[in-house]
Image (cartoon, rainbow, N blue to C red; front, side):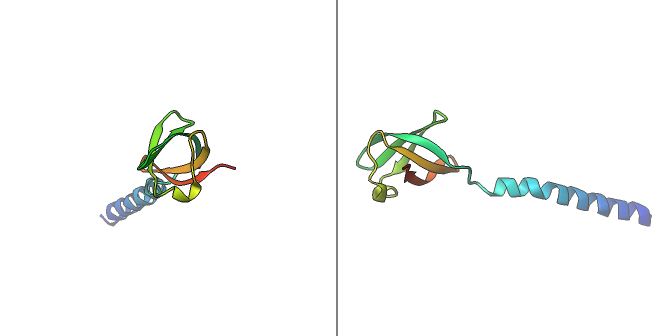
Length: 90
């Protein structure tokens, strides 16, 4: 009986510890830096077309210090399918 309980405990620990790296990967929502091109600058949003073909909208107040214009190339990260840390590429 003791061996069965001990085996179950060891198995449970192996499952928990084996799944920990997978959980850590999903907990960090940031991704690598991507590049894109500013396609439009409106009064409220800046539209960016990424190199992956997706289009993103960023609140103009978030990137006001970057002084972005149509055609500028930018670098950004994506969190929850939204661009963050948008910076003009030099």
